[in-house]
Image (cartoon, rainbow, N blue to C red; front, side, top):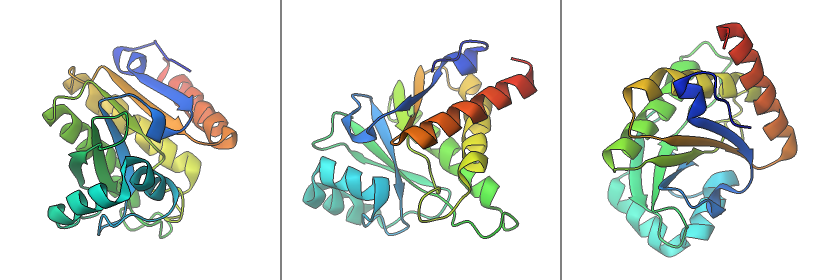
Length: 184
């Protein structure tokens, strides 16, 4: 689903697919603070990129705090780079989780821009084992992208990638609701 109502919306696409197969400048990895690889999208990215090479590159970075983002090569992926970001663990929504999640998206965009990227793809951050409610996390992602993209014209295309149909369809509903609320 491509949205074209405003310049920022026109640069955001929501798709269903496998983020490890996208030929974009950078994909974002929903990582842990040790950047050690894990389950879900993190494990899939490590396996597809080449576990040994990616783990060696991640070790050199010395971890990543929650809300920040760090860059490695894409190795065997079609993407040139992997941007590793660490989302917050959901603790009920009263301990700054939305600010930390927004920071993940902002910092990832900044890292992508600074690396010369024009295209970047994001998975759903913090919605798996970290327990962030899916629709709330998707709204944070979209609001953050919409706020940040106008100041980053270098980033031409941002893709939100959802592996399963239920998440993809829920993300489309969140986007539609947000567009209506904004009068877009």
